[in-house]
Image (cartoon, rainbow over all chains, first blue to last red; front, side, top):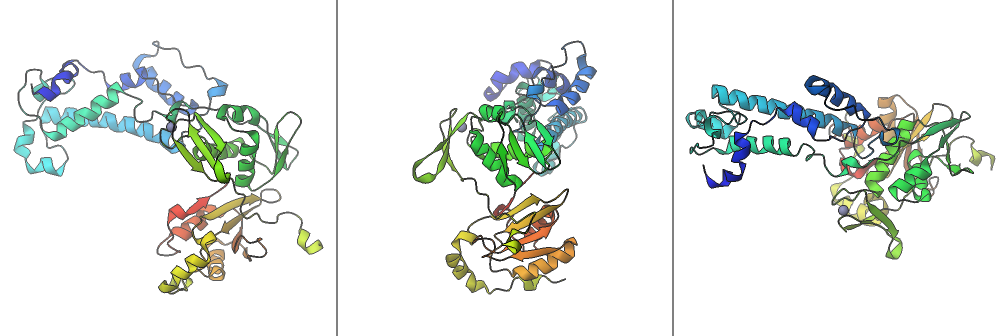
Length: 288
Length: 117
Ligand SMILES: [Zn+2]
């Protein structure tokens, strides 16, 4: 076998597990919604292997992940499974894969037979035939996904904050009860988060005796959550390494900076601006 | 409808626009939402470049979105430039209008910031 492949022959030989099984082993750190799906998957594979992860209320939302991304992960897994499937087919039937370059030389491609997982054909340990780029590339991604299931989504993934607790006060006010706890977790001051919330929601409010935030207007938990999400993207996570372990500080000349505790990078952030705010409610101008 | 005439500017005037209005042209277009009484909401659009005729935009948009709206003058907005104010949550629609190349202003999506929940 050619030298660049030496350290990987072990994997080529070993019968690698199907994608489903490997997805279980790597602890995919997803929130409730995804967990359900994961559980279903698990049931298929091995129900008894692992007790279902405790639905810890505190860890319920992963604020740094957008819904779309979650879907994408599933999709990626699907695609990965499909790819593997396609690879198998390709191996068994020796069909032309997909790429234009490969199609140009079908004769050569048909020689690229073999099942990577089973280690047959070109993937045989003592095979000397040169493996073309396409199957090597597929193999790389297959292995990457297998060995590092959470590679594609690593980084911000494990960052979780408690879901905002929203209570309705009367008909026109919303109480954001656990803002202090969330701010502590994000390492930001209540004031900063509050002013961001007010600016984004186009409203005002006050803090009550037990440090709960009283917001004018009706807001659902989901809506507060969305704003917190954008706050985290804008004012918490490091743009370089995506770590949420950062510090917000007032630098020279009134600029705010976020300094990352993980990688040391520093970026300036915009001050929170309320922008234009329409006159709602009573028409004070007419009266005055 | 041809919205081409919304762009009532000549290309050489743009440079002047920029220097005269740096605070606006360089900045984002902000689309915001505010709650009114009950379930009612307001959408405000701040920072549409001055080269566009705001009145014409409002006219088209009101018809397209079937909502009422008004223009808040620079003095009324306390120096934040002319603001288009629409009834209801029109954030997605107005963003689409601002970015649409054929039927809108064809602005770069990156210059638009949508706020709110
Ligand atoms: Zn960093």
